[in-house]
Length: 212
Image (cartoon, rainbow, N blue to C red; front, side, top):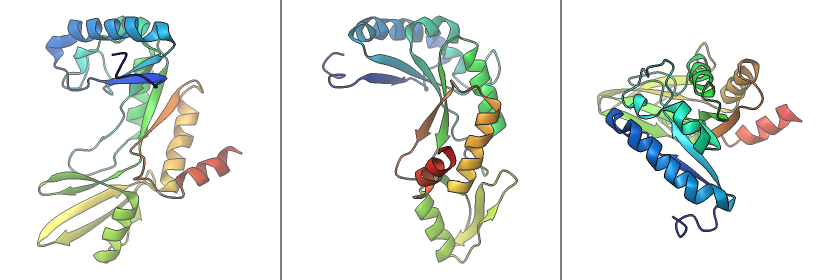
């Protein structure tokens, strides 16, 4: 562990595919990593499935005993990503707020995750796309992205006889999402931007303008 984390000031454990039967093992593992890591000044985080109910409403969500894990971590990254499975936005603000509120009952500091990528839903499954790729697809197929009720952009196209539906967020819709979080979650809740490189090139300039 010391060799792997050399030069790092923090570690986040991604154990989201753990089966429910591993609940005690997940706690034991996190406790062991915490004992090795945190005394050296490094912070430890755990990527937490975005459960909105207790018991968890997600497959494998019960592998994470939030209250048992809380003493061993510096933060929970609540992975509020991939909200839609067959067409729809990558995140829903109400759902994300509910997931973070539940995670905060553990007593550990929490982060809400904001996806910077979009999704192309096709007959062969969902595929992540960058904002630039989404705009390129819209241009190539002559589609006009429209804003949903939550300002997320969406459009449809047909390629080689197969229908596709694309959803993605630009600087405007992500800014609106962050504003919704600011109004619904306390300021101590952090934000994890997930998928750097896929975002609207104007995103962080827009955020900076809004927070000056």
